[in-house]
Image (cartoon, rainbow, N blue to C red):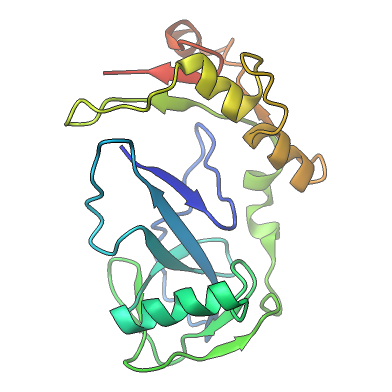
Length: 213
């Protein structure tokens, strides 16, 4: 199992369709916003991602994302620019006017250096198209699983619940729920209330956390 952290947080709530992997549908943008994904390893488990621990993405105007297919040299250059602050994740626009869009939602840049347009958000970027996904009360469900190697996270479901939802075991006041609420200025509220879904309510091991083998 892998945990994924996205620089500009895109959390998918239960019952909501994820944005990742959305078909490009012939988008003809000349630039996109750069995002970074970090893959975190479970202790004792290797990482099978051929691109290593970090992957970069294009964020489109409609909120969908596509993987940036970078060469080793381009990826190293992007990492360096992120470290130096020349590229600001979630803000910097990447010139993709000469890129190739593959059928598996990948954006392949031409060989050589890539061009950064600026460090401001793209003009005309409008999140209103996804406002129903990013505001209101959303039910979240975390699932603790064992992978094919019988490896799992070394935390109890109660600890996971507290770390994500602030439900009390360690009095974790700074958590995913609190940060989504604060960063959205109170527009996005995370809920673990599954009282109207008894199958889920009866199956959870701790509030908002389901454990499966």
